[in-house]
Amino acid sequence: MNCISIKEYDYLYTESSGGDVPDACFNWLKEKVLSRQKNEQKAFLKLVSRKGKESLQVINYVGLLQTPDGTCIEILPKITNQFQERDKAVQLLLKMLKAVHNLPALESTEADLGLKNQPLIEVLISMFLKYVAHLVHKGIRSDYQRVQDSRAFLKGRLHVAKQIRQPTSKQHLFCIEFDQYRQDRPENRLLRSALDKVLKWSKDIANQRLARELQFSFSDISPSHQYKADIASWRNDRSMVHYRPTLPWVKLILATQTPWFMSDSWKGISLLFPMEQLYEQYLGKVLKMQLPKGYVLTEQASRYSLTQHKGQNWFRLKPDFLIALNNKPLVVLDAKWKLIDARQNNSREKYGLSQADFYQLFAYGEKYLPQGGDLFIIYPQHEAFEQPLEEFVFTEKLKLWIIPFDMGRDRVIFPANFTLKKEMSLVI
Image (cartoon, rainbow, N blue to C red):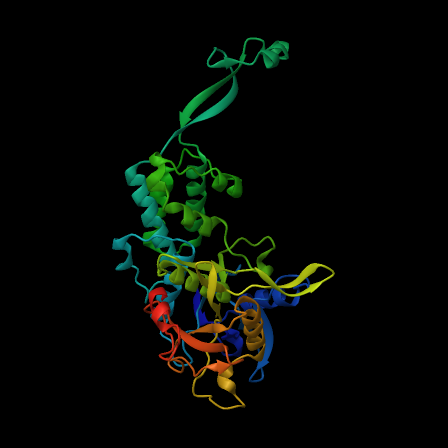
């Protein structure tokens, strides 16, 4: 598999113009970009001209994408404006995916990932296969399944109405219904389907070998044809404890995140995630885990609207996070995935901050903190933004802080002169 590794907002060029992307791959992506309808969801790629060459710029999403010619494009988070080590970006993306999608990982797996040499898709497949191998070692569970059939003998319950309607040629058969103990149950069907899919995706010999071995264990089980229904039927009783860690993996592999241009008949790898949402959800996980007793973290609070019209609430105000104590809002926080620059401390560049974000936070403060308080916008930490910026004053009682989130240590860095530092130090 030809695998190309890039980061957010990078550009793709054809091999014929000096780039790394095969012409067939580029032309297929370009065709999808040009055929996109106006009413379709947010674009994943945009066609641009750069340095006199036609190129495709990657935006918004991170993850994996495979095109019909077999090229695999690996898109990693942009975590620095300087040279970016692939190792660190892959580790960060894996950590965020595991937290947001509740993906567990065996302790013995982490040291053997081989991040430097393996494409990201092979790393993910390896983690999934080792968990399925652990499940098979514990035992594949069977369950009683209701079967309706025509047999030459009586077993279970006779369907009298069906028996009466039997044609003459089948009068010697009994229409019966009975319970059969077998492995063909929703959980096993989903795992069989997931194994089938990763076997098609993987080009790594070790992964292929293990996938085939595991596939043999599920050979008597039919694949799932209704993913959503089978996922909804997944049982979590005590006998299925060792199945629980595989459910997030099954959801990720079978219910893949598909951007607008993959909505046609092509069924290649498509594991793509909006980076803004991934960052926000990951930050929410970190905040929630560290929240002490008594404090309540609300994600996407929607208590207030910007205005009322004819008795109706219009333009709902939904901050990313609201921290309250005893039902009293203390702090409003918003997550923004963007690399700002603390060195651009002048009225022209304004650190790379967005005026629209300030309007948005001011509206949040007016509604959620009417008596005054502190608002925060949390950006990822990097070499040009390591400490909080000096406070921005909306009013005498309402202040906005721009603070970094150290994703390596999972720590939000609050300003030293923050007035609620004593209380907030318990929270973060």
